[in-house]
Length: 396
Image (spheres, rainbow, N blue to C red):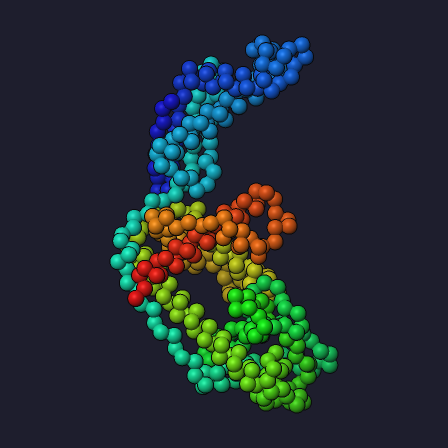
C-alpha cells in the first residue's frame, strides 16, 4: 500500500491510497472466506462452499464492495494514526478503481483538527477586581425600576375586566406556576435579573418569571405606592423582604459580572499567545449553536425568526456574517482550552457526566443520540474544569 497526504487551507486534507493487485486479492479472499462461514447453501457445510458457487450466490458486487470497505477502513485507520490526523467530519471516500484481481485505489477527503500553537500560558497575569458593594441607593433604585415596569405593564393590559397572566422578561426553560417563585426585577442599572424565593436552593436556576397583574387602568387601581402591598403583588412577603431579595440578587449579578470580566481578560490574553487555522466547519457549527440559542429565546417570547429578522431589518445571511468574527473567536478559545486541558491532563469522571445527565430528559433519545449527548456533556465539563484551572493559575 502506498499513500499521499495533501494538506490544504483551513484543515482540508486529501489522502490518496493505492493498493497493489496482490493486496486486493488477499483482502478479497479473506472477505470471501468470512462470508462463506456465514452463508447457508443447501448441500454444503458452512465454510466448505466452493468459491465459484459462493461468488454466484453472493454476487460479485457485494463481494467487491465488502472488500473495498475492508481495505478503506484498514488503511485509512493506519494512515490517520501514523500521520496523527484527527478528522472533524466523516471522511468522504471516492473509489478510483474496483475490479476483481486488479489494483485498488481510493481517495479520502476531510477536515482535520487544527494544530494549536500555544505559548507559555502560565505566564499570563490576570487580576480579579473586587466586586462593588451594593448600597442602599442601588436597592432603592432597583425597586423603583421594578415598580415602574409593573405600572407600565398594567397600562399595557388596561381596559380589560378579566384577570390576565402576563409573562415578563428574559426566560430560561419552562414557566413557573402562577405562584411562581421566580420574579423578574431590574437592577440599579436597568438590567433585568431575577429574584428567588428563600426556600429555593442556591444552586437552583430560576426559570421563567410569571406573576399576575389585575387588569384595569393604573389610575383606577388603589395600588400605586411602593409599599408592602406592592411587594406582595410581585412575590415578596413585604417591602423589607423585597429589599433583602433585591440586595442578594444585585450582589449575585455584580459577582457574575466580575467573573465574566475576568474570564474575558483571560480569553483575550490566551488569544494573544495561542494561534490556529480555524476550520470553516467549526465556525459554521458555532454559528448554528448561536442560531439555536436565538430561536429558543424567540420561542420563549412567542416570536418567530422571520419576525425578528424583519424587526431588525436584516437577513439570516447578514446576521450570520455579523456573528462570524465572534464565532471564530469562540472556536479559537475552545481549541486553546482543549489544548491546555490535555497538556495538564484534566480528567472528566464518569460520575460527573452521570450527574449532568440527571437534569436532562432522555425519554425520546436513541442510543446514538444518548452517546452524542454524553460526549457533549463530557466536553462541556472538560472545558469548564480547564477554565477553572487556568483562572486559579493566572489570577492574582
